[in-house]
Length: 394
Image (cartoon, rainbow, N blue to C red):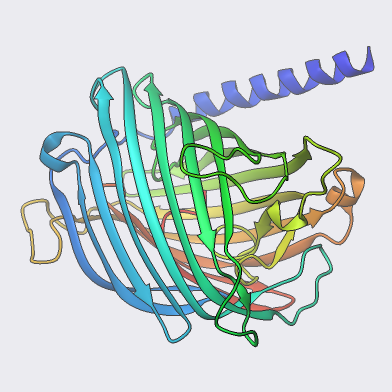
């Protein structure tokens, strides 16, 4: 009976949040961006750099074309490096197998491949109280993924199934050149609900996602795993965007995000490495800490942001250049506070013990196509974390 009452309370709370946020969407003028750029062949050929705490500043470039020939398909290529790290990646997104991006429902195919070389990379031990001094590792990493995605209700709902594999030769930096290859292959199932005013830069509404990553010795059609570990990594995320004030050229939004992950061992006879859990720290979560600073079976993370967006356009569509034909539609400033923790145990120790915090400020450029360039400065008890990257944190 107690479990049923708890279920009813949670259900009523979620319904109240859903109803309230949809009422608040009416405060902000309708601005739901199309699933794709409203114009075909949006292109980028940008010499660029990114900064991620724990990795450093990497120089390189981005090449991409959005909505190729008005098909809804995107292509991107990135190449970044510094004296300790080199990453090269390519992706083709949303090849429409059924329907099109303007329709009520569609089925798409996407694929990506990434390779990285690590000359000296920071890695930390597992657990919430891991030592502040990182281990230095080196090696090579290659990852591939293929995804089928069902889009429904004009991209309000996404259901996807992904097969992925990674192979690496990671070892301590003071070891020899030869390392043992590790293979990690599995399948990922994801459901997303997006009831916001815009998928790329939400200012009102609610969105949620549920992800299950399954790992077992059989792997997938890419490869089999070289371990007997059998587990599911489950991730749940909820974001709420409350418009505090809106006018024709300014919007103030209170943005909130809750994230929780848990690893479930499906074969108690084989112990699963705690490194297979989710990691906190870096550009998306606990921005005042280095990349992948804390890792364990279970994690929880909260974000509170105040976003002030100046929405007056800064460019025109009819002014293409050699490097891009996109234009900036808004400038956004943000103040944020992050809370997060990892734990070997999924109980009160995860939510109440030694919660890590960071806070800071950021600035984002919002492009008409949906591209967002973000600079965040986060402060924690371990120092200052810098992020210069593409994509909102949530």
